[in-house]
Length: 353
Length: 225
Image (cartoon, helix red, strand yellow):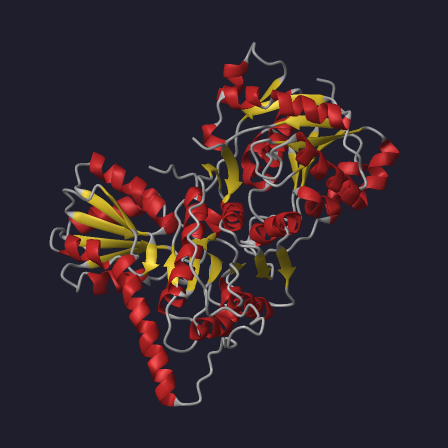
């Protein structure tokens, strides 16, 4: 077994990014993700990388855009209000089809909200956030170990599909400390013939751009992009199933909420309630397949979230509203307790929503 | 253990400073001393001395904490009453300093008073399972950065090597070599080794001076199944 180290979730992202070959970090500090920047500031100069604290979130995302255009592995990180500021840049990066990794360690909102954990940027991450037709691959870690492994995965997927991978974490997983190990990072290498690396006067120059003056050209670009998104939907959905074999009720939860939910599922099983859990690991693409299959088996779904009910819409879509879906949630920085989730499971069993 | 009037715990982020400071203050109180503990962390708004407020109060320990600690206000400001730590000489004081050099800057303003009194113990908390302090050399670098930031030289080392819930007696035994090397490199004695109570128990007889810790409860202590 690889050596164990005790890491904070945020630090695990930073170390994993470095191991994935990222040598360019641009950011602007915000709680609760500051450890990512602090770790990068310490380590990047020692390994010949760049750590740059920009003058703002907007500057930092455009630095990411620039570095991404050269084909280098590049990242930024922020928390909810900071991601809103980066939205324009995210749209430009999507419109230019360059790969990047963006981390959102969510806090309570809207507005300045608070600094406690939240999952209320689900819509923003999975449905856009910036303007225009575009998608991001959204990865939702539920442990410090996954903060590391999904960061590496995120870089690989970004390069493979020429799009942004977003790590959608929350203040709890960012701050919690757990022992983890870094297995040898599986770094996938993709040719980047489109990258701005200098022509050496030996080839035609490349252009990275999101501006199209002719609408028919822009339409073709968008259609091509959505063909790629289709491939992502077909191939890259990730999820975990827990006690689903004989389940009559299905809890759906991601990130920190899934850890609470898992404990509640285990407790409900002790009471004889046949309940299981589906944990989406990718939020986009959403794991439609296991949910659609569950919809033909279970009696009801319970969506556990740290928001007013956002993922629940995707659960209803994936299950085509075949079975009722109830919401068990807290917001504003609060986390439901395993008991609260257990109560929601009991209610579902009684047919009360 | 012979105690100085003021004991300060500083070190790398997540090395265990707060847990040790809280347990150290509780131990002093148990010995019948008048104790106050001060949270001087201006860097991290989470995992604060204040998380143990009820326990400290029950033990009669006076807690000095930033006004906005554990609220949604991320305001790095220290209260005026923090001066009591260095000025009230009737009281044994324990100070929980923020992580790294960033966290230690705030200590600087109290240092002239501390040096004038000359009755302090400045402790470097080391965890060799943390990624940026894996070796004695890396730990020494952090020590020096902290000293530069606050202007107060360390006097002791505490070896708090742990892997969180995976910590075993062996984890600490394996760290002995690093701890001794850091002691040699810095010329500072090891005040004690520390570990969660159940691990400390296992180490009885195998290791001298293991300080047992009752760890703070965290709101997200949700076991991963």
